[in-house]
Length: 324
Image (cartoon, rainbow, N blue to C red; front, side, top):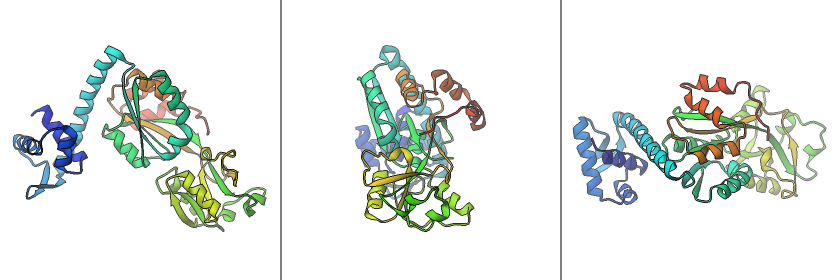
């Protein structure tokens, strides 16, 4: 078994079984990749991929299991490389994160600006995607860190750290009837079409649950992943908007009014996560602490030492998270 063969298997899987694409990414030949994968399969006595002629069509069940182990092995190798690099110069390298639009636009700008000024030689990469995609990228080691705003049971191999609590606001055009009510109730909101996040973004399933528990149904007529898109359609009169409170800026959103919805919906929690066993370089620790000051190096180290979600949750059970 060769290290190179493990790299080839992982890259083919990441390239949606497109060997040609994998060869371009790895700067090698397509026949070379196919040959090495076949040699590995012969050595192991199993098939990692199902084939139709010369084409790979799927990953076999045993192949999927082995792929998970390959990801872990290569993550450890990356950790060794990072450790060696940090020893020589910890101010150089790359920090890649995956996150949602809400985090990218409304909570990260000041943190990223501060970080890149302190570490000008660290190349910062940001991937905007869904919460599930963010968790998946971190689980596979494609990014160093994921940030997301909804409870996610995926990513069992991640250390998941709570960062802050967030609230929702109802947004409506100026002088909307809802602005005249002393205190909005869910039955008032249920009378209007609703524009909000796509399921899986910023706790949209919690929103549905809140209506359901009161015997009501949310009339969601339009969903989007971007708070600015939601605000655009609220301005057009498509419906009443429900967004994360942090996404409303009274200085910019002058055509709209925001109504606090803390009494209608439970607050959510924003999490960050990275793979268990990841070597945390100094600048990664620094970024974590800049984003969530309560996550000190000592606390993060304690989290990394846990062996289960229950142990990890116990560390944070008495933390009073900041609300945004």
